Length: 327
Ligand code: DGY
Image (cartoon, rainbow, N blue to C red; front, side):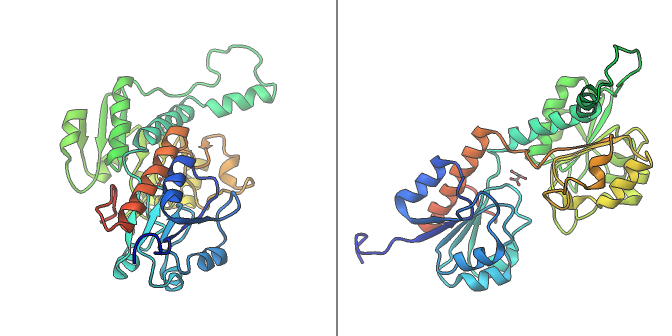
């Protein structure tokens, strides 16, 4: 078949509002269809739309499992997720069918590290609470002890998940004159020395840190690793920050820890479920700051994530090495 009479390969994109630069790269080469609404594609629709497609461009809100793959048919060659996390994909199931997976590491590292620092400061310096005090007419005058928080200077910060994002957070923390940066994980990493971070056991990190920052991937190993027992081991004035996945936290346990002041405060970019209902009890707590999974949400980063997802798909459909493949 010559390329002129070879029918174009088909790509389904699960959102209509992905940044244009990446989408156009796909449209130049392939027959691209997109879900029509700016909300996650409903499951039945996804199952229907994936049929007969050569590639799927998906989000972290799309569950990729056996049922979906059974429906996809034999043409499906690649799944490109516009995210660095791929816990929504049953990787073993996808691989067993010879389908390749692309993801978006590196391009979002700085945006997520910045958001992590923003959330850390918003929580430790009580920014949202202060804003609410003004709206409630409670800002009567400057007062010596009103709205006091805690500072990073001279503190011990523990990072759980010392990969690209965790290291990006650690590098930024060096500008805040913290006393020690600790990280846990199976292995000591060469970057630790360069950044000035010390490898310790998870237990030591939990009991010695004034701030605990979670930037690890969600895996069967990390699922709900922050539970009652772990919160009980933390210092009472600890601030807990999570920008990874809600699933690494036993959320009712976190709620108890915050309500009982076992820990001082928490800042969360990720929750269970997402979206968190506006009436959720965690949102009623003054010592809990929550933002709606916006770690990578800068215009530049989302553009780059989309371009990388498109490049991954193009490479796989061309049978070439993908720029970022889940191996
Ligand atoms: C990811 O990419 O996995 C982040 O959670 C959102 O960008």
